[in-house]
Figure: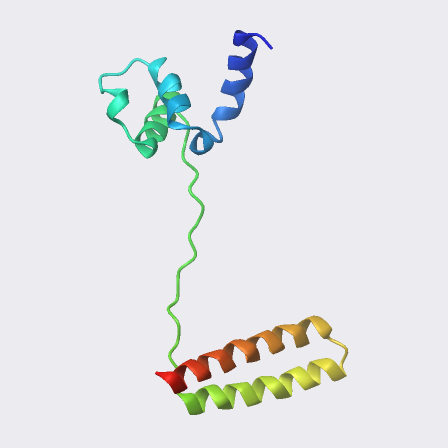
Length: 121
């Protein structure tokens, strides 16, 4: 593949995936754009933002899920929840809902681990 063909293919893919390029590649791309700032001093995030701004690429940031902190439960609350989940798991097994039974089993396992950590702490 010739140098020009490689650059054309390279430019087609870089618009969406600039974050995946190395700093050297980003500097080469940014060198082609007229600028007033020193490119060699920019960090990778700055270079990506500079190139996107120069090319008019709108940044589509994914919607971040709101993080809910872990709910702290006392040991008796954990044990009560484990008992509830065991009942739900048995019901799921009886009604042939294996995928739900597996989910309940995993939740029970996680809660058991938390209760053991509370015992140590």
